[in-house]
Amino acid sequence: MAVTEPREADPPRRRADHVAIIMDGNGRWAVNRGWPRLVGHRRGAERVREIVKASPGLGIRWLTIYAFSTENWKRSTEEVLGLMSIFARYIEREADRLAQEGVRMRFIGDRTRLDAKLQRLMANIEARTQFNQRLHLTVAINYGGRDELARAARRMCEDVAEGRLRPEEADEAALAARLDTAGMPDPDLVIRTSGETRTSNFLPWQSAYAEYDFSPTLWPDFTATELAAIIERYGVRERRFGGVLRA
Image (cartoon, rainbow, N blue to C red):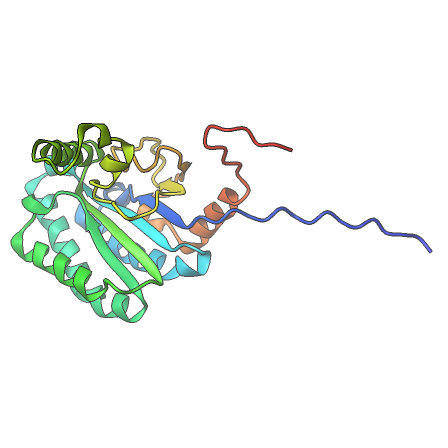
């Protein structure tokens, strides 16, 4: 009787616990169809709902999305006001569902320039969902990586000047503790949609060792199925963090 050699087991797939997404292409999606850009942004908000719902089933525990950058203020007043209205409406409409589904929602970025009503909505949903653990959804709004680093450095300087921090303690850990993302794990995987291959000032400190995936799909067409395929590809990547893998 022939003896069958045991088949080597497939290596375990790497999990993407924290996925960050640059949601690009809303405006182009609408313009390509002859519609106003804000139609694309509204469709993009609907896509967020689908991706948030699918994330826990794909093993994602932390999902961070880039909604509005510090540079986006350069857009037309109509588009900026429309975006702010979409953000407020999303929070109002999704609050109950997010709370019921165990999603914790928080925001990063400089809130001081945002409308007072929007700031209140943001603070309320953060407080309401603060103990949820199924998925940590972080929305970057009026966020820029350089701005975040500058604000963190300023806080660190103030702490040194006022004696709360010794100069020799002003290290990487001290700076990280003063970032908007303090207490959050760094992203494992950063995805950008729409075919652009820029990082656009998104989480530069936190993504220093993240894997990147650039999708040609415009954000309103980005589906949970495509996200699952990207997660699958990520699972077989080698991550060395500057070291060397040993056989």
